[in-house]
Amino acid sequence: MHGATPHTEEHLVSRIGWLRPAVLGANDGIVSTASLIVGVAAAGADTGTVVVAGLAGLVAGAMSMAAGEYVSVSSQSDTEQADLAREREELRTQPEAEREELAQIYVGRGLDPDLARQVADQLMAHDALGAHARDELGITEVSTARPVQAALTSALTFAAGAALPLIVAALVPLGWVIPGVSVATLLSLALLGALGAQAGRAGRLRPTLRVVFWGALAMAATAVVGSLFGGLA
Image 1 (cartoon, rainbow, N blue to C red):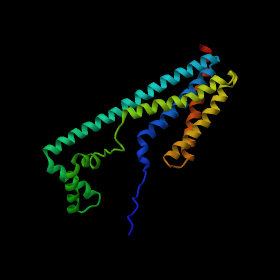
Image 2: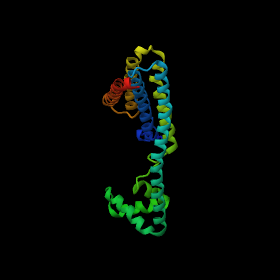
Image 3: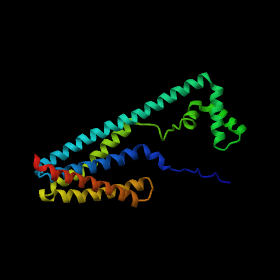
Image 4: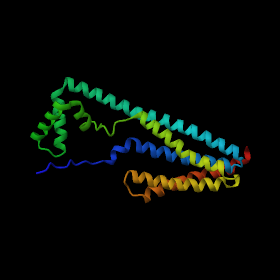
C-alpha cells in the first residue's frame, strides 16, 4: 500500500493580518482623497490648488493610517502580552487548577471528563502556555497582533489608493476634474470591492455595492460642502 498523500489546506483566515488593513487602507485612500479633490474643485479652486490639496491628503492620510493602525494594534498586542504574563504566572503557581480549567474547556466542547483530562495533561506537558493561550485566551498564530505589519500595510495601500484620483485630477482639464475623478473613483472602488471579496473568497456583489455606495456618498457630501462654502474663501 502506497503512503497516503499529505492533506494540505490553505485557510483564508490566515490572511486576516494583512487583508483587513490592506482593504481599509486602499478604500480610505481612494475615498478620502477623491472626496477632498472633489470638494476643493467644487469650491472653484484651480488645478494647481486641487492637486496640492490631493497630494497633502495623500501624505497626511497615509501617515494617519499608519499611526492609527500601529497604536490600535499595539494596544491589542499589549493586552495579549499582559494576559500571557498572567497565565504564565498562574501556570507556575497553580498548575493543577490550570490543568482542571483546561480540561473543563474541553468538556464544554464535547469531550467526556476523563478524555478531557488526558488531553489537558498531554497538551500541558507539550506546551502548557501555548495550550492555554489558544484554548483559554483565544490567542493563536493567526490572530496575534502585528502592529508593524498593520501600519505598513495600511500606509502603503492608502497611498496607492489615493494616487489614482490624484493622477486623474492632475491629467484632466479643470472642468472635468469632478466628473473624471468621480467616475475613476467609483470604478476603482468597484474593483477594490471585488478583489477584496475574491481574496476572502466571499460573494462579490454585496461588498462591491457597499463600497461604491459609501464612496459616492462621501464625494457627494464634499461636493455640496465645497459648493456652499467655496464663495466664502
